[in-house]
Length: 381
Image 1 (cartoon, rainbow, N blue to C red):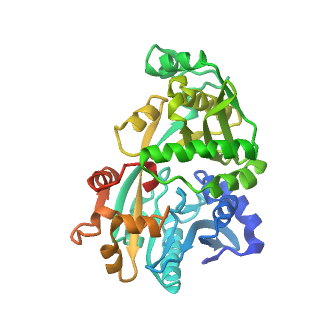
Image 2 (cartoon, helix red, strand yellow; image 1 turned 90 degrees about the vertical axis):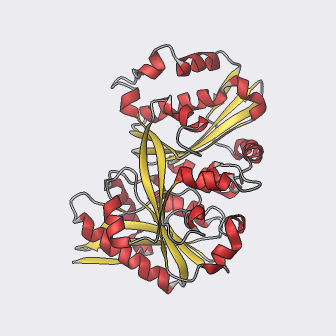
């Protein structure tokens, strides 16, 4: 008999052991990541679990965001992409159905206007979500990722042709290695503080909102000591020029954020940071390097990630409407973005198109780029 409930404190250790058994669980399913988000003081976590014979067999982490314009229950907050995970031997369809039904009931109980959930890009589960969740809005998003076994052989030697043959990647790596740049792995607050100023500057240049510093402070405080987070910093002649934040479990690493000081772009320090972290990840046994998403398919960032040997996978962002969203339509995108910062509601290009409910990320970006004071930056998704 399958039973569903909210994760209790006395089951947290069992939950972490359950995650270790799930092939495509990520660090963003974890309680450590939950605590990073909770430190911001803006969300209440609800980790829904399914149990069979008193053993956790499935889970769906959700975050409750209270807002005067309508409450939201979501799995997509602060660049969190989690979704349902379950053990391989269970009845997958039944576990998903129970977890989704419970999440919808919970959202209604919390007086939410909507609930938004993402599918797991590494699992073939989109049809199950569509069948049981019955979303009102669907956004097709994408990620890029690297199978590290395609880059390195069993001895840790790079064998991928993009790295070994003459081409754009090899040319830029060779130039980067000649630059006066040193990569630091020192995990200290002083470095995080300096890098955050670079991040703020770069986001301003892109017309985007910087991620709150509390997220990065939380990674340093909670994930780094547990070997679930890592910062890399690039220095040139004593000055920090770029940095990256990487979060991971035993199998999957997410490139959560990389930011470079644009006045030092000729140093190609992001090439060195990426090269360094890929080698490190492979050495510690990580299998998948997840770049997460970018502004659009075929864009500059997309092509940059692609040349490292990346593949693409799609995932769906699903929104079910539970209340009156007429105020959302009257507020418009810019105000909704302000009031629901870093929380996914629904595809903004469909808000005023009641006859349409399915769109793609490229279509959303195209719509938003026609708006004044907007730049298609990563902070949307």
